Image 1 (cartoon, rainbow, N blue to C red):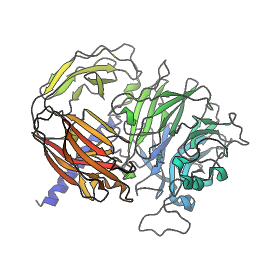
Image 2 (cartoon, rainbow, N blue to C red; image 1 turned 120 degrees about the horizontal axis):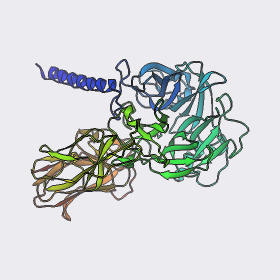
Image 3 (cartoon, rainbow, N blue to C red; image 1 turned 90 degrees about the horizontal axis):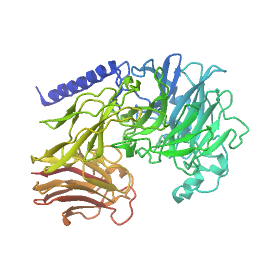
Image 4 (tube, protein in one colour; image 1 turned 135 degrees about the vertical axis):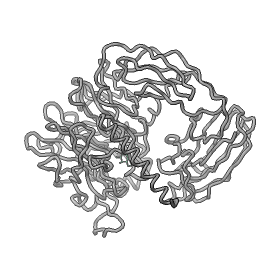
Length: 600
Ligand code: DGJ
């Protein structure tokens, strides 16, 4: 067999294997966040920043279609399902060409019509049903040219599966606020946004229909400084007029800089999960509570618990859906795991949660789960009895009533699983840790911890550093990425692509205790070509072993080829990979450490 044929056979085997696995799990009703979700035609679901509508036993999922990449090149997708697992593609219910020219975008092989920005977006579409007019009403954030237009778009349809007809675009509220209206001192952009002339900006949005049939739009306004909540008219096609602050509209969380609002209601209280503002890169979520929909809204804190909670498990909120047919208080948090390099490769994160008597939201990362998690058992689970297998796998027998198990490493919460085993991740030689396991229920109840199991890593082998979690890391902005660049694309230094390594943001450091067990550290470093559109990135790279400089580069820029290193680390117990801002500020200092590995 020729190599290329062999590769093809191998790749199609891999694709089939994972597809089969996906389908088997799908049949069992499992949700697996972060994977490619297939529709009933076995095509990947393309519906980002989605909104959900439940009507007559059917769920409809509306979202941005990014099959052709960035911008509004296709329009708004719709999928339907009776079980939230098997999704039928209902097609593009609001095609690109139904939007005003400014908010469209065209592929390279299309002719761009005059008046089209060719970078228009139609983001975060949401659809609600109006009982009086019997119409389905869509609201969407329309924009172009770096988000300076920031406008609401409204469309209607007689059917949930479209076609939707565009009605109008507008900025709903004109309000003279004082405070910060000049994003990072960027006067030119403030002029383009023109909040004083056109009205207040309209960006990340959501819709919510209250029990009395009144509907509200939630959106990021005041150039993203403040969330607005505005009551809609009886048809849901406009805002209620005339506007009266705190009667039919309100400024929520003034100068809180929150976006991606996902509002919902439980036992008469209003809740909202939001994200911070970091583009396509994740950040910590917050949740807010109010007794009245127009507020005052109180920020409670981060709903996410456990490992990766600081990045909302690498996702950003889009919707909170109450689960039909399960006990009151059962919800799904729905979010997007954006791929800021290729939007079409963004994935979905859905996590179950239950609001109990304490009114708290607790989101934990379940790699897979099914609807059984919502069925509560009254008993407090007893602690698991944990055993260590020879091949570094912790196992235990399932605990009655538990929905999941938390794993603690030296007392630090490092993982959660719905299975009864945990494969210990690779560690550097010379390390030893105590592991305990705690059974937990979705409502926040947990068992006592198991007895600790001590595991040590004695064997020395060559190891890619990015396969092992560092002892600590810190960086100017964002989160340390493993085998990815900071913005979630491949590690790429001046066109050279690497599969292994770290994407980080200078200045920063990544620290490993190596316990004197390795002989050499090899790899490459350089500026990630994410910022190749500009020449502002400049970074210095340095490797320090037990306080001594082992390797140092001159300032590297976006087109500087990757610098190779191969340094002696014999006897060294602590290694630091350090990046500096190159002496001229941190703007776009996306740094890559590539193919970094320790030799025994
Ligand atoms: C974050 C928003 O939540 C997304 O909807 C999108 O507008 C990106 N920013 C664009 O950077």
